[in-house]
Image (cartoon, rainbow, N blue to C red; front, side):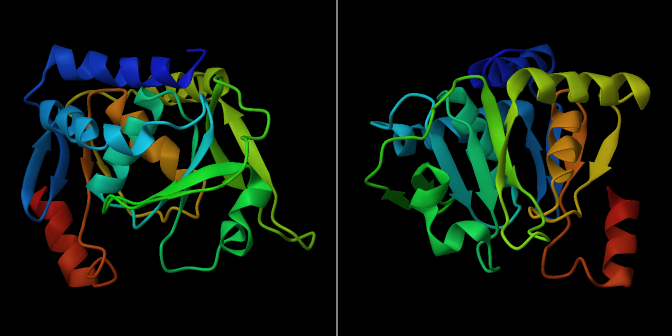
Length: 212
């Protein structure tokens, strides 16, 4: 897969093969692949007027809405950097330094940055940050081809199938969380989102795992 819209098209393959299969499970019930694809349509307007393939910051907690917004960025041809809403982050000091064209939240807020995108490239999938152990965190942009190859490796190595379920516990600041998310979605499997407020409670988490 060579561009972000190709990644979204790959997600749609699972939507078309079994649209009513659960893509997400939460305490409030299931969200089907068909519904998740419809949710991405709700965010299309947030990407209108952006320079092609410009890097977009998606800011929020790791929720099903945040996931839909990531998919919508790919659908509209944009790589993204996902950042937590209430934690210090390299982007918080100067988003323009990282070449971010705008910041978008699942609540529908959009802040445009008055800059041209830095070396915009439709082959980018997403950005992550180094740990900053050398004194400054640096953005690393991951290509669609590399990302899709890793997802294919995960699918084949771990034999991820549509009847599998993946527990979503890793935070957005942990780079491998995207492999958890899209390794499942690109295999037609189900993502299980526990309540972020209760996920630190062992009794709740045990019951959530048992019930999903």
